[in-house]
Image (cartoon, rainbow, N blue to C red; front, side, top):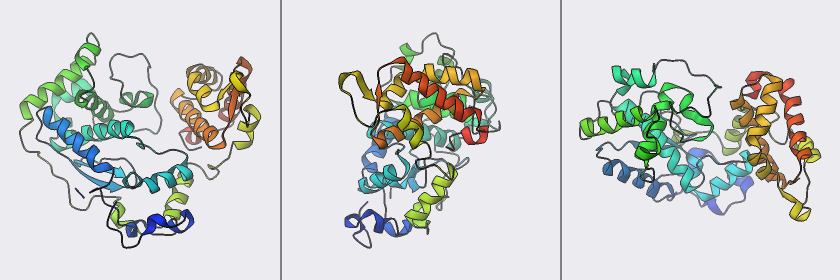
Length: 341
């Protein structure tokens, strides 16, 4: 495996100066970084499950497994706490920023890598259980929140988004030593998928992979010549040109800028507790997919935390959020609603 040996001591620089550095010049490595023990834990989990497979990991611009390649890309910001802080300051969230969420994502990506390493998606039984691997991906999808045909691992019932994601999510549930998946999913149709993976592990677990990763994986941080500032500028543009603070004024009208005592809670907590109610109402009146509305509400919560907003504990506040989201969704096309706000 391969944040420690740096050409310059950039960690002590102000954020403004770090943002002007090229990503490749940060000297980031997985070795000796906070990621190393988590990856080693994943390898131990694979060994305990009877698999000799240990996918290579590298620092990339986001969480990914390159198409049909058994290698895991991890966001480079997770290799150093200073970069995690900058990521949060710039994007208001850090995907996999804590140990628990990082392990969830590692297990998920490991599922993709295992699928690609042994070309499981070509098998007849795989297609019967999960569907066609060649099914087209979509930025948005509808899901059934109470379906028992799928496991629940990542947020927003991600297993229902695509057959490849269904397999990766099922693998992650199977791999996690903290999951008692047999009693938990007993009686669910999803148990067939879990038993299939369990059977696969016993049959091919000690066989070498059919596919190995190339030495120059795409989107590697070691080759990224752009500065951190340019990287975040592109990232924000992909979310919409007015991403930063676009709805701040509206959120400040709905919520409070300071707590009013026990009759208040953090605005983000209220949004989480009433998420289903809010999304159901907005979906009914706008026709937008619930997945897209969930994503918008998550961004609202992140922005409320950044602004330090609080909410009154009354129905009027919840309905004000419904009205705000209905107004936004009613005048927004679906391409923008797909997490691009």
